[in-house]
Length: 78
Image 1 (cartoon, helix red, strand yellow):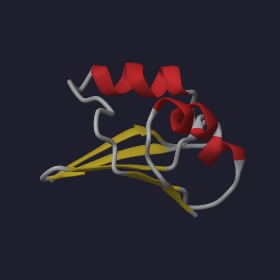
Image 2 (cartoon, helix red, strand yellow):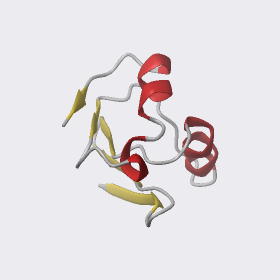
Image 3 (cartoon, helix red, strand yellow):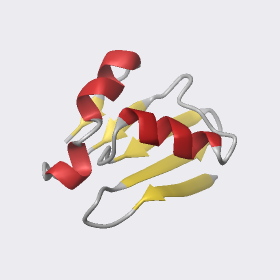
Image 4 (spheres, helix red, strand yellow):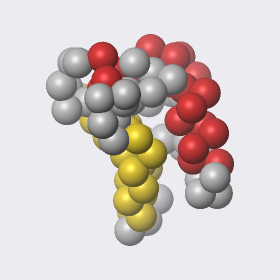
């Protein structure tokens, strides 16, 4: 299991979770570009993303959600 916090705080929140072949994002509170850049520093990517869990609808949790959903054929849970 891999849990990587990409952003945490009032400027944005994103956590990447991977277990076996399952890949999830918990929140999407920074831009898509920032998510991809921060993942790449950990040698991770969103290929075959299984889903996005949004904890609540504040902007610091959903800022990059629209673009991420446009770029990846996945579902999100609220």
